[in-house]
Image (spheres, rainbow over the protein chains, first blue to last red):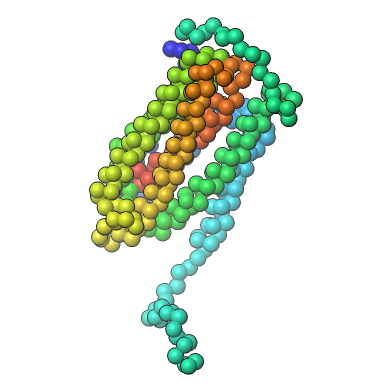
Length: 110
Length: 222
């Protein structure tokens, strides 16, 4: 078969099996956020397979691996620092106050 | 295969700023990985917006997710995973200097990319017909209408920008296929094929994450 490396074929089979698993598990009712946690876990596994065996990242020079790690590091910073805002923000109900229109201070001035 | 016998190739020489072919290949690959790191952050902003939407309005996102076309999405995932296989296989063929196999595998990869875009276009057409396109013809009632609109806004943004990446990938792979056919690569020089492969696999990885976020949201619900 035109010299298809066995590693590539096994990787592809694993990816397809994980795709079938994530599709099937999505229809199973699970408590809390378990569905999305499992789905993202499977996505991470698939991404690692592609990174390791198709992109050969872990056999790449240290500088290359550092570049890949930097991408993930700054992604983590993006999510973590945003979470410090969104996860700690308390939304206070505004009550009956009308939304500001910008015209409040004009009537008295003229 | 008839192309197993090596073609007579000139000995590849590095560009003047590099000492060896290995150093040149390493620099090219490193450059692509640095670019891909910036791409992670490019998609990261949109994924953060999705995370906020889903955390703030879980029921609305679940209902919106059930509007998506899971069959097309799953088939498209299979198409992209298979295209990654043919791409990795193409790089393997390039490593061994098999010109015909390389050309054909690159062509198959590009065709799988086109199939992905075709299915995506068919899906967009369905969403247009169902009035799910925010800003153009969005019509949805019910308590979660605004969340569904935001979900579809992110959906078109994420899949649209991903689709642009697929398009760029197809063009790059087609160029590589033409160059391979003309004998531009050999077992001693195939860096452009390898770097194009890195880009294509990255586009595949982005889709691996988009697939559950878009198509599998809310599937276990009513």
